[in-house]
Image 1 (cartoon, rainbow, N blue to C red):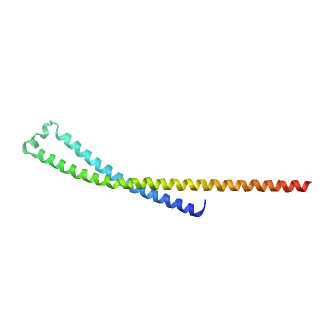
Image 2 (image 1 turned 90 degrees about the vertical axis):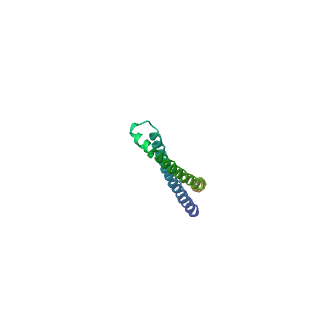
Image 3 (image 1 turned 180 degrees about the vertical axis):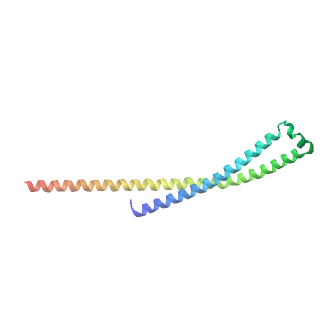
Length: 140
């Protein structure tokens, strides 16, 4: 493999790794937000139960305020999640492109290595044939 091809392969691997890390960072943020949204949904389900412990809260209107807070917070989290998803789409596209480039360069490097090995074998074979021809000529 040529030095240029080796350097290009290293650069493409670095580029691919960098874009994959950016995607992983966004996925961590997405998972965190989805977890928070799910927690709020669970709180909402629990507040809809007929638990007698919640009766005093219902009587003074605290449950209504709690529900309003859950609604506001869930709305904010949904907006944040939408922003993360919007940022994720081009990053995902970049990951695919960078991975494709890396794979193409790796394939070219493999092909170059294979051609170099075949050329070396061909030269070895030619050397052996030349030596055999010289020996045959000397024994005549």
